[in-house]
Length: 75
Image (tube, rainbow, N blue to C red):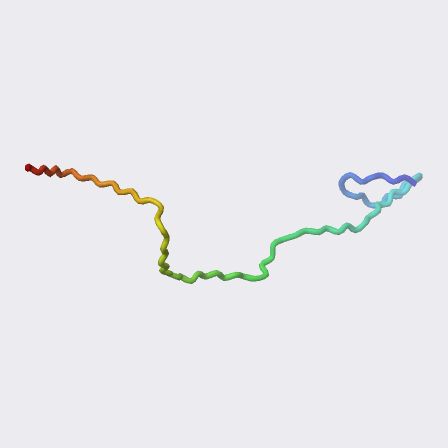
């Protein structure tokens, strides 16, 4: 008896004068995954407006004044 790995398709059982070839079959489990829709999620937003008063001390203030008028006082 000799076991030979199969390459390609199995052949029919052949009966010859000196040897008999019988294909050996086995079952294989094939596992695969596929996406399936289970549920739907609906999202909505609520518009919210809010006013808040914030008080805090200012560390430093800078003022820049651009004055293009010229004023002269004659004394």
